[in-house]
Amino acid sequence: MAPKRIVVFSAQYLPHIGGVEKYTANLARALAAQGFEPTVVTSDVSAPAGIERTGDGFDVVRLPSFPLVGGRMPVPRKNAEFRDLWRFVESRSYDAVLVNTRFYLHSLLGLRLAKRQGIRAAVCEHGSAYLTFGNAVLDKAVIAYEHAITMVAKRYRPDFYAVSSKGLSWLGTFGIEGSGVLSNAIDAEAFRASASTRSFRRENGISDGDLLVSFIGRFIPEKGVDALVEAMRILDERGVPAVLAMAGTGPLEEKVRDAGLENIVVLGALEQNDIASLLLQSDLFCLPTRSEGFSTSLLEAAACSTPALITDVGGVAEMIPNADFGTVLSDARAITIADEIARLEADRALLASQGAHAYERVRTLCSWERTACDAARACGLKES
Image 1: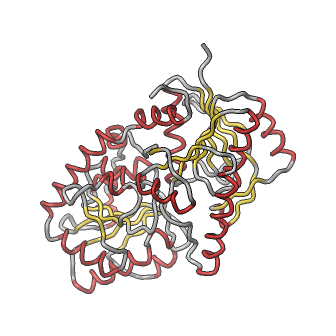
Image 2: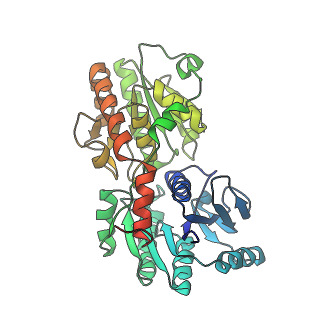
Image 3: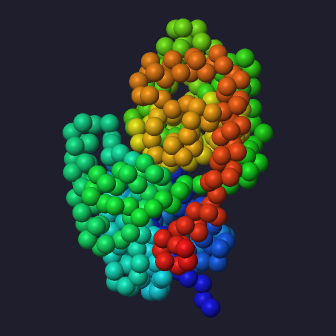
């Protein structure tokens, strides 16, 4: 019997770095390993338009797009190349469509394809708050846009899911009753084993006695970058022996560098094996983010036995059910972050215990095999 075909729509994809991108790639890989035939349809934001044959058992189709808002909001560019590639996508018959995130025009392409082929469609939510671009006027327009495009998506009557329980609750904002959770996941042991041999303490002159705090993500307002920098300024003034290593890039990178704080090290974008190495060497992972569906970096930290200090966003309740597994910030203010880092710096035994518990939790609860099975069921391709 021919394998069941699932086409997965994701507006952004690797090598563009982000949680949804990693989720899409890992889910497609896990579906292929379970005998399905996935195809990923994305935009050309980070790689040329065309068809890529991967070595993981699935194809990636990159459609031409206009990279609005620095590539964060790709819009289909329906030129001749787009039409040729779209004909290729439509020429295949599929058994189900899975759309990652509901608020891209790219997502509507997937829902239209499902309607035309008369197949089941599922939409997976990856956020737990409105999109934000750090501009009050633009953010108001974005909220209106989110509601408008979600209304259009609802007309196709897909089943809606989310990567965390908080994301599932967030769907209620748009009058959507979610059908379940398709959890973010990680191969914890493989990620941990992939670590490079780099020594970030030695490379950056960080003392073994200093608390090494890591941040991994885009340098954008919604990740809490401004508050985190200010928190390190407060800790510097207090004389708390903590150093923040920030891995990533983004529009706030220059602002972070210009802060001129000796207890902040900007590492730039890192490869996955270097991220694993950084986390293994870190005493604490800090992410005072405004919104997450289920942070991939949180899972990566747990895989490296690194406890997290994080705001109460999507996925946190699953990974940090109580203080034995990490620390949940009461708010994302700089003073709150600084106070918690100082408290944890003074209790290294607690950090070690939290890290050990976090590793056991992520290893047993968050596997891609499990999420792929759930996704197949959501698409009606596997019995419950």
